[in-house]
Image 1 (tube, helix red, strand yellow):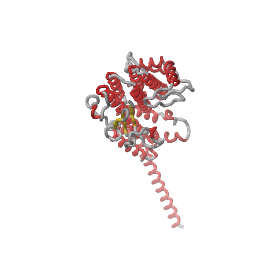
Image 2: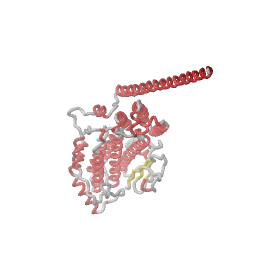
Image 3: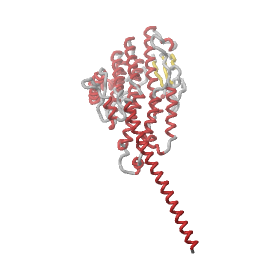
Image 4: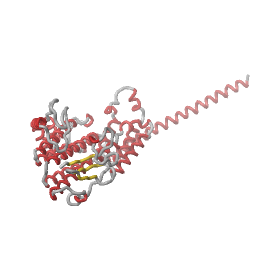
Length: 442
């Protein structure tokens, strides 16, 4: 009996010690977790403070304050907004090139049918006030739209409609041989896109790039239809150069970082602030701070990558995206909010290649005016008409040039990095590779 009693007491002492060990381990884990959360939280705070000290905004509100125009400075935004309000959309049953529900495409150098030409003239007449306001706004250097950045960009669809209106005006005036009016409309279209230069987030940047592309395709159609003077061609080139300086991917990523920080700190901005199981992880200690640190790492690396040469930049963006994909579920916020910087970088390179193609075409037209023929090779344009032959951002080689009969073909190999012989998207089956082309058939 005594032996049994001693055994029972020993078992109780063992269980007591085991319980103490488990409780102690849990306590250590709890203390460690609290310390870790505190370190993560303070780390996020320090990182944000360091950005502010370096002069970078860490929220859209801070960016708006930094970007505010001084009192009394002319602002193009209200004039653009008046133009948007004056815009008259075409009727649903009207057949127009590039515009409206029944939009069609027009081959380079082709003349419009009489009914379509009349529809274009009527559409432009209905938008006479809008076009005048777009021109007035283009003469004002600075532009800052006044709206709540968290509500998106309310004027983007109207801006796109107005730039397409200007493209149609370019085509209309080119068909009539009015080179002065064409040049004015091209510059107005470029400036309308540039009005997004200081707007935050990547969506504004992508709209800016898209508007520039619309202006350039309008210019391409004009070069197929009419002849410009040397001074007009130089003036158009200057306008393209200005747009190139106002297109800055690194700046767009800096503002996108502000939006991401805002969404992490206030999940309701991304539709995650309401009740429900999907928001539970956000309530865990340290999760939002972890998200801020992850996003600062991702965006910081992306901003740095955006300053690299195009080919090195794409390689770096691929690595950054791969690094994020390898992270565990604990880093779910950066996985959810990180923008597709690789694809955006490719679109940026495409936009810059398009600018270079357009500038080279203008140089060719200046050469044609001076000599009566187009150059046999792009080297003939250097240095009088071009400082140097532009380099294709997708493969590091000079942009491609080929004389055709009549006219010429300029192209970039685009995303796949392969020379597809100057085939356009319309020349190949869906999903097949193609090149970015600028073609003049005269």
